[in-house]
Length: 139
Image (cartoon, rainbow, N blue to C red):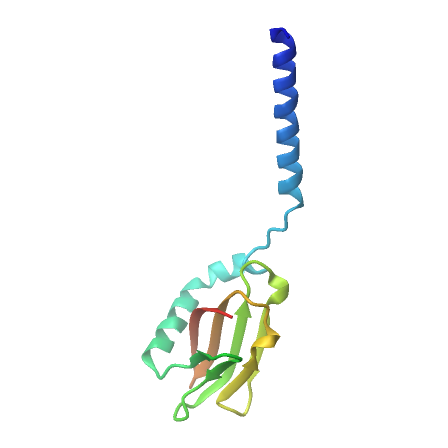
């Protein structure tokens, strides 16, 4: 075999690899963290203040046991509009939103979730101040 054939074969293999890589990467689904990512970036200072507001008062707790996920607000707190958002970082179709209405405790079965990591955001109003708690859990 001479040099010309070796170079042609090496070039063809390299082009095939680049083509395979391009096709593989173009068909992979890459979701943004949220659809309104840029609008949330503009309002990031409000989010920082909400996290600080939540740190100053009694905390809403997330507890995980063998078969349940429990979100519990303190009984003495007068929190309103409590909302828990479970975001799956790798698949936005698995995101779940739950609201606590008329109660201070929310009990969720683990069967509602696909096993894996979730980013949990609990938002509520403490009087007229918005509060936000961020946590990462594994179900």
